[in-house]
Image: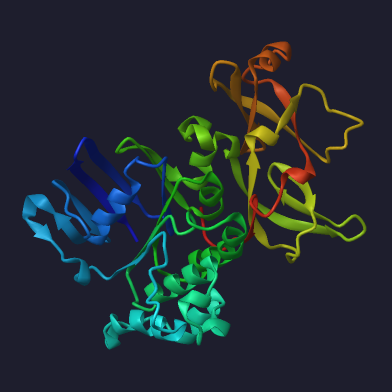
Amino acid sequence: MTLSVAVRRRLGAFDLDAAFESEGHLTVLFGPSGSGKTSVVNLIAGLSRPDSGRIAIDGRILVDTGARIFLPKHRRRIGYVFQDARLFPHLTVRQNLFYGRFFAPKAERREDFGHVVDLLGIGHLLDRRPSLLSGGEKQRVAIGRALLSSPGLLLMDEPLAALDEARKAEIMPYLERLRDETKIPIVYVSHSIAEVARLATTIVVMAEGRVTASGPARDIVGRIELMPLEERREAGAVLDMAVAEQDRHFGMTVLRSAVGDIRVAGLDYPLGSVHRVRIRARDVILAVERPVGLSALNILSGTIAAVMPAGDNLAEIRIDCNGEVIVSRITRQSLETLDLSVGRKVFAVVKAVAFDEGTVSREKRVET
């Protein structure tokens, strides 16, 4: 699926002028509140009209102001999941799901009811009404309703924004399954780097109504300068790593990729399974000699590929580890004291406890 967007729209004092193309399975529109993310998805959905521009999915034109084309929203075959679930309170979960199915012509119903229910783990909820569901359960039902309309594209506007951390952790594995086990392309709006790093195949970064960068998730998440200030603590490298060993004695799991081996607290994942791992720049300590006598279990060797300023007193160091790049954020004082520069060999130290459910995904099945 290729999504092509080039739109302009004036909204009071806000000027949206956004253009990007994506072939990713799950494209995230990422940026701070007010950057124009929701405005873009509303234009894709047909909930609003651009002043000028063009939107197309695999060559199928949804909007082309130059050709005076505007496909009505009910003909676009797009599913939309909002921040709040917007379930019908007087209907059961089963009835809410079938409401979505009602909008898919019989000849175009690609999603099986039972498969969607199993995918989202909502079989035990079918006879309940929305008032008896948790926030995470409501969102899973809302996603199921959208899927059963058999959309050609699924839009998700910050579906976790209204949930607490426990509910976010509950629903995240289902979003990963949705990305990996359906063929429906997804455009997902978020301002959370933790969500983006775990879910995205393609990232479109927005700020003040403009696209400032776009590309594969692993390339964008590592560019700390692109992150909103409040999210920079969570930025870093994204790697695909395989489970190489389960150390039952110490309750540890060994993950392996070109960077080397990383030991993390035990994960109940099968040997050989591949997972997306985020190494936060703030969790990476640098040394110019191999450290000894440390409690930290992970020491990776590499060569400095780039040194960039990251504010008045910080620096961002990009380290090439056998072709994979990890990122460290250190003080300028440390940069000068260690005499770090491009080409110098260094050792990156990461504590095993730096990895948690938010930094290691379930099994990865899509290309990034």
